[in-house]
Image (cartoon, rainbow, N blue to C red; front, top):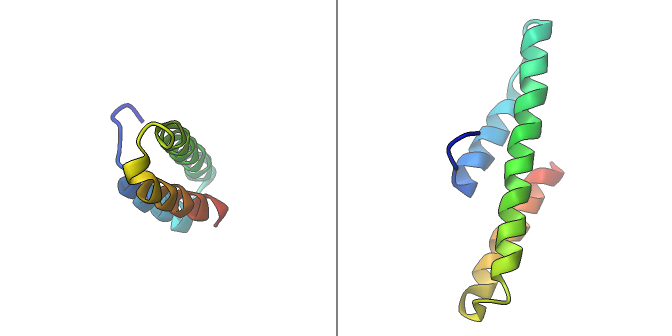
Length: 76
């Protein structure tokens, strides 16, 4: 994805593509590619949030909460 999406936008996209029912082979390949792309972006969000954790202890709980939410989406 060329433009950076928020975590919530990525989760919404993940839900859309997870529920998407392809009607032909090309569409199934598109679904597979989009799911991988979105999961990669979400993993990058986790990586970024993980690096922020030690830097800013004031928002550590919020960061941990967001990481947990992303991981739950990736596990589904």
